[in-house]
Image 1: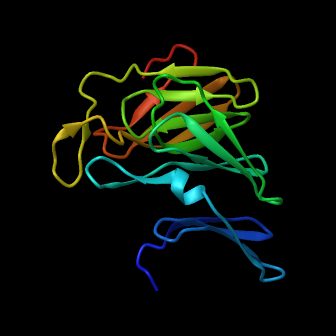
Image 2 (image 1 turned 90 degrees about the vertical axis):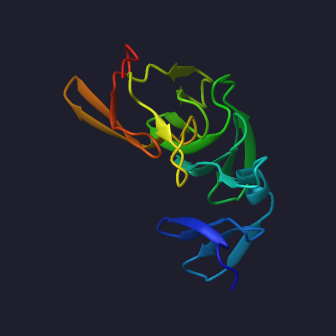
Length: 190
């Protein structure tokens, strides 16, 4: 009955997962048995208020058989096994990734879209290897919504990958940014 109890969901063939906003627990609903299970600590990690009292929600992604929750404040992550609900914490060790707004899976790698700043981080949680991309083109800026002033918050919205033979195209869509970008994975040029 509370507005904004959940801000999203994800599902597979067996479960529906509800991501908490105001509600205190992460919930998993078993489609076959109708069993509902809650996990504490996810909301407190993934949803926080900043110094201005604004709610900031970290990114959520899928990594193999795990859901990944990012902190909106630093470079830490919770990996939650979808079947067992066992959780493990990891740190990307990126000095630029201080709050993740979005997580995009690409094979064994995760692309981390920043909540603050203009650096996208490519991270392999299995090896710990990171690479950072910050070569945004001249004229790219993030405009704070709804107040319309320039900032470095939420510049990127999502990423799309297209592969034809040896040719790869990576497109980065804006969130508060003012343009779509392409990225060359090897050179780092946007």
